[in-house]
Image 1: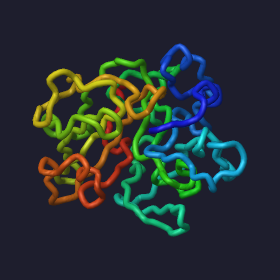
Image 2: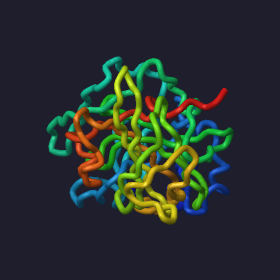
Image 3: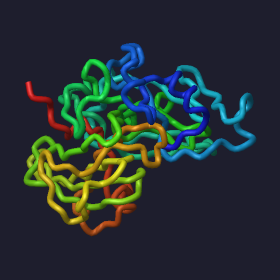
Length: 295
């Protein structure tokens, strides 16, 4: 998630975003900064943004001009996502956003199932909670929301957030969490550059009476665990990497994303770029597959 602008100003405006100094500044986060919808309401910018063109933004250079209910953060617009709306019942839903050209583009995504808790704090994650009060999520999944409330970059160059962002100290161990109803161990599909330094794993999940493959993406790692390579089997608790800010300078956090592999597709035979293509996998609200916290 690339950023531009003054880092100190950004940190002052959005104290819930973890800077390179990590948790000392993070501990100043207020309950209000977690957003109107509870934990996970604070924001970090959309991914893969380009700087605005010279003819796009009146006002201060590089400063986004945002619609109502959104706030400028350097060259992008952000909002505080809410988690109190009901997700659609359909297992795979089509959503849309308006591109910079004005054309509407549709995409598929799997929204949170109504039987799964909306509260992000109900789930276990690959790293310990990094926010005050034991909260974990600083920016949540919003692809199931109307276009106007999805996180986007200035000029609509990037729209929506298909995962969750988990702040923690640089170098914190990132461990495998077995997904809900997972069968056997996970397999490592890829290690290397993608969302910064990235690890992708494949998990077989029993779902609706059949076995389905899910891909879990761990992004912006400081580094991959020593010796970890594609083809390795990893089980609950195994270390796969360490929290960092690669390709997301000064925002030390883990980007965690889940995608359901389409039926009939062998994810082990796809390249890293192909794994995230819509004909191979569909982005999924991670709350559908993350395990619940132990009572």
